[in-house]
Length: 287
Length: 265
Image (cartoon, rainbow over all chains, first blue to last red; front, side, top):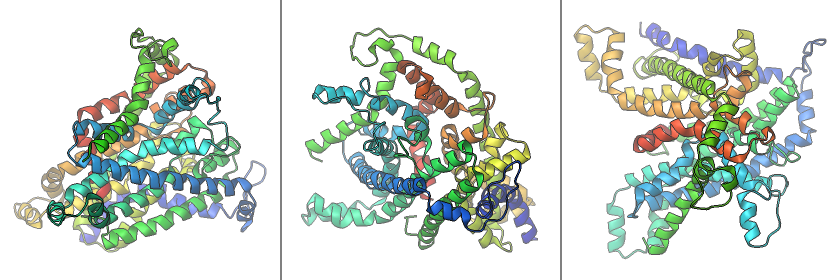
């Protein structure tokens, strides 16, 4: 009886989950072994041909590299900032609630709105960044139009958007630390930095790992801002894997190649899924 | 905490809100003052009027509200049933099924836009609000969150209700659901914020004003090639984020706690 009840309760959710997560994941893998179907020629089995063109596609390697730099540029800085913010907001600071609110507010804004706001800062000549630069006599600069600066612009905006979100996890962890630790350290005469590096930081390690995995997954899923800021340009300098999938599928209409690119993305995400499962199993994160 | 640190914390806070404050400045002043900070600049609502006229915001609002409500309602029902099954029924294949559910935490529907789009076109659901919402309705995150909560509820309560002649559904509805209220609230806040802000999948699966939610409408309106001036874009952006932003400012403690709880579990 319990078997029947259990499955009956699960069925509605299971149908949707299989239909929109498991089936498409498997279908993506299957599609990547077939050629692109057109009105005249149906899809035929091509084995690893799509993967061969993937290996020979310079844009693919570039978006992969970009994703790597995007992750490396955003994750360590936003985690460090988040920790700093949490430490500040957790100590006796005048107007603490207001400060916490300022740090967290970007989290509730949609990425599209954030990109709209930041686009203006980066606009040549009339943008805020150029205005500030002009005060110091620097020449006007096309921040988003230059392959050397575009990634930095996108990274700065993403850090602004995400640091406050990660802050609340550190804040929760800090508040769960027993206050006796700090008292004991004070009595022993430990300096604040010594206490932080030897006590607080190691105790926050589970939170850091948790945030790290989440931030990494995010860096592969977050592409909304590219639609407003750069469209992946100039010359793919700011393109990311998921945005490239979108372009290949919905602009170039090459569904087979889009499926092949998605397989790579799924493979990357699955690797992190395994990592996260291990963490849940070992209960590395507190609670 | 040293004074230097306090000042640094405040400066960072000012830096962090300044993009938003700047949007307010630009939206409430004539375009001529968009980049000159004159405290005596005249205030105006003309930018909001223009923004409202340039894009069908009313329709986008309606679509977003419908979308968010529909997704949340379906999620609450589906995740409650599934979470209850995982928490309290020892059925065959439970652990495997649970692992398969958790997979969706990493592989969310927005990564599978290509296949899900072809599924939607087979179902005839392209350019419908149901089509935007359907992939998100069985949320692994919601199932996981409710399972964890249901597991903490003492069995004795359930047994007492059973002795009193309560059916399984009655137990779920009278014992489990009321006791999980804080989890439901936290989940609802996270879900509403997520889907209010979600962009990529709604963009892919819609192609008309009648279904496009606010984020997609805002992206079309704010695109640089649309040629709309910046004060109006700021006003439009503020219109789109206002409901969520106001709700957040009013219930900030609840919001932060919900995001925290949701992330930790």
